[in-house]
Image (tube, rainbow, N blue to C red; front, side, top):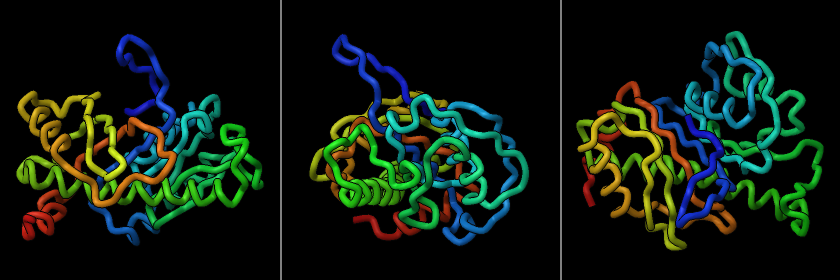
Length: 234
């Protein structure tokens, strides 16, 4: 499970200012958008609830930690479409979901309120920034699938892992830190090496705080997910 956590780097602690949760699952956008899913989520801290929600639905979630910090998600119990469940989860948080695709969203303050973390940004600018960041989750999803499928075609999509990425302005991956093992040391090494040598399909948007935390979850049909990337090895 990914949380907004403190990590020691160069002898000092810092708080992740952005938590990007990308759950890689083999569902079509239409299926995700309309399928009924069983939810059994207790009331809990919002950042924890969002990680669980992403794992259940395959949605890509981008949320600034200072926006989620201190907020409590409502309990969600029953069979719901993902968007309905998310709406229930956000009740009384003061936040609403802003979608950039059928299975990718970011969070914003409700009622057009300004975000105190960006006092100098006007509302239009803030919306453009949020949309760019949310859309970038889809870029990450496709790019990481491509990189890891080519690095380990017989293993990708069959394990869970959590890691952090640092991305250069040109989209090259500068560094990787594994937070949760894939379960095998040899596989961990392959994942880290492939990512460090990889590049994403687009440069990151401006003001995307780093590192970015990524959650990989097993896919129902990983061979089918990898096939497009293995058939055109460039």
